[in-house]
Length: 445
Image (cartoon, rainbow, N blue to C red; front, side, top):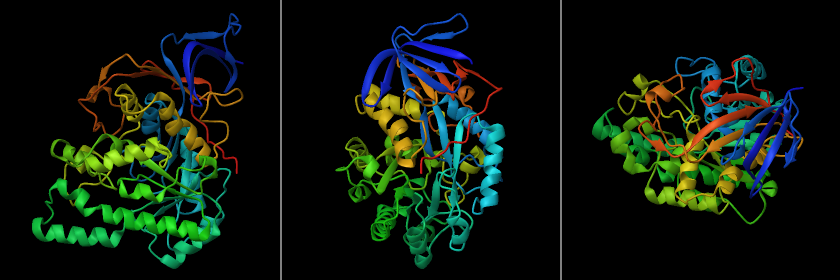
């Protein structure tokens, strides 16, 4: 069995930073400590001065396969993810066709088994009329049920309140939701179109997809979860107002209602629209500096539990259209960890808290088996980071199939040097292991 020793690493795990060695045998971490015996056949990586993190678990990505593969696919985006320190991703159901039957969901698992560089799971998509299919979803193998309570693609908007309450009441699985009130958004959009036609200024995006639209939907979802006892996870909070809906007075393991924030809502604010235009058009919209400040506060005080990317690539041609035709979303998996490491350089976020929100908490929240921590007996999903190796993000360095990034022109102060997936050195200073693939993750439910 192949052995690897990572020596002299500054290990960040469970709120501590210690200098130690890690022994990997096969897929697993088998020893953590100093003085690990190094046999002749053992591969040694000297991590002196660098930090070793658990692999990042990204609980919300859109890799566009099947049906939208001109934008991205599981192979290209998982490769970019691994280069960005993400060793596990959970992908959303709004592909073409949408993963709203067990057969279509299995088709995605089959593709990932052959092509994904990272570990993976998928969410099953709920609709107004697929409750029977939804209820046979296997909680050991599928990450969650995904519900669009606004702004869905195809027929995935769940707007029948009777059906919604049935879903919340009937499933014991985690329900992950996109919360924006569609009626409010459509009213705001109609008002803007009456003035500007299709050429609405991008600066109005957070007015159209407003604080009111977000809070109205999020508060209804939380109230329904409280009423039914459902396990609810609210995706991509974008307003300070929404953060009052969540609690921080009990451990994450005891929370029935949890929340996520995404990289773009922590990095950008509405002052960036003038420079970035529709490249930073997301749903929910990037909002004010006050909202960004409120999201950071909620994250640091544990009202928000997880940091994710909501990686959702489109082609530059698509993004360059007028407001009403330019799709929302952007690519982030390659640069999300780097962006959050930048926050540690500026004293906003500690390394320990970063690991908690991007590695530990997703594993706890989704009850992922043997991942998210640097522990003996856990899968060796690991990331080595050099915090003193600045790099400029240019088009030549971008791995996304769409070929662009909202971070182009940004200099990050850190570099991801090595990424291990299930004990395999999948990414080594710009080089990929093309022979190995990730695994389907399982859940302790």
